[in-house]
Figure 1: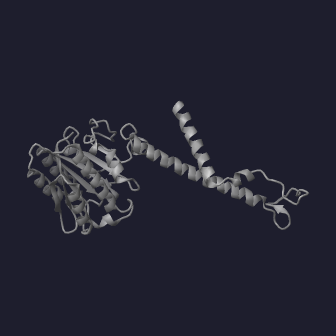
Figure 2: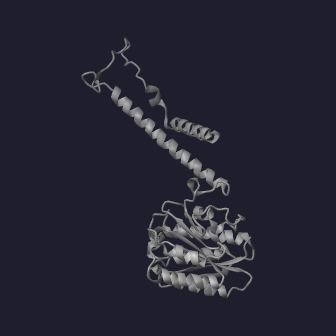
Figure 3: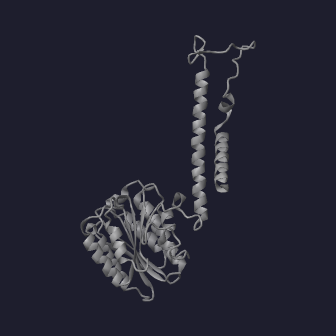
Length: 319
């Protein structure tokens, strides 16, 4: 397991109030930070983690070189009360590097993890300046991980953050993880290269979209390698099966309602333009095809849809 001192830089700008990540960008980020800190501390008892912000009135260190998750949670709470302004990535990284330089245990490798959920502004949007900073970090043996989400995701072929990671990376020790809206931030980070080594996964075993960057969705179904995290992959598959079953049940109910409306006689005895069959001697309408489907309740329909879906998956695996 890696022996590291890590500084986590969080985004506490006004953009963190957005709700495109449940329940909000900031809360999703806070949950991801807790996951990272807990994983780092559990992987090696000597590891330390610090947390700082980079917006509001300016970059601010909240926790330095701690082994206690409680201190990190307290720092995140403080950050949640001070949201606003715009992020200053270069200044925050320089402060984080200075904090790492004064770590007590010099045997700990240095790493900075930055969450970016806001648009790049100022020097952060200048590729030349960012590459210059990257080379300085590489010279000082500082590894970097950038986790971009929301407005931090760059569009188009030109990517300042990608160029930054390419220039700071040494032996593939730095990564750029992009998490699209609607995704679970913590789950995507767990299945990315960022925490792979801390979880005992050999370098390179996690799918990546390039030598030092990875997409939140990856190359696997649901964005998770089932060989690395089978429980999460199974949970996501079950959730997908339930959603398919629900949609199938709704479609079945809709078709049943349509059939029922078509067989309901009008005042002149017509059913959708077609003369209805004569009633039986007991005064009841003749049973129409599809009535059995209408009598199925929603739970039975869902169970049937799940069974059909599972059979299809089994047949595909046999092929």
